[in-house]
View 1 (tube, rainbow, N blue to C red):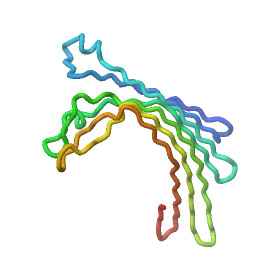
View 2 (cartoon, rainbow, N blue to C red; view 1 turned 180 degrees about the vertical axis):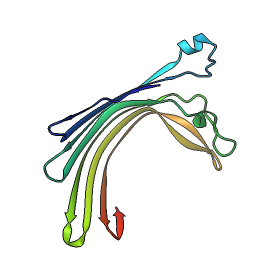
View 3 (cartoon, rainbow, N blue to C red; view 1 turned 90 degrees about the vertical axis):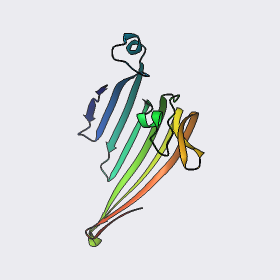
View 4 (cartoon, rainbow, N blue to C red; view 1 turned 45 degrees about the horizontal axis):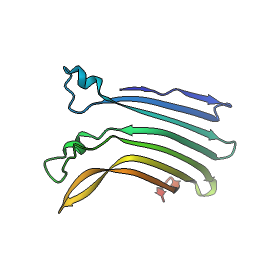
Length: 168
């Protein structure tokens, strides 16, 4: 596989832009001596862009979007000798995603306390998402969901003191 990750910092390093590009080659039952199998291999391309902006206050803004793909793992294809049955008909999973987040840090000097709050909104559309379902008592098997749309908001509140750390 091949990965490229160029980056750029602007405005006195307050704005950071990164991009990523990855290529993966996969094939079913590849025999490295069989040139036809190698020529018919799948190419998975992952593209991601992200930006981070640090304001003059204690605010941080981040965003990212991209398209990623992944081939089923060996575990998903062949299972184990116990409770997971493999599925050799799984398709490659592909996802388009985007997220936007805001973070703020606050210092309360009198209490020797640092706090951070973050709010992140995200959306993710997947084709052939790999999930698991129960097929018998205690036995699961991976399968593809043709199309999914997942969106939401995550919030996080973190407190740090010399005596403790608390994450909510």
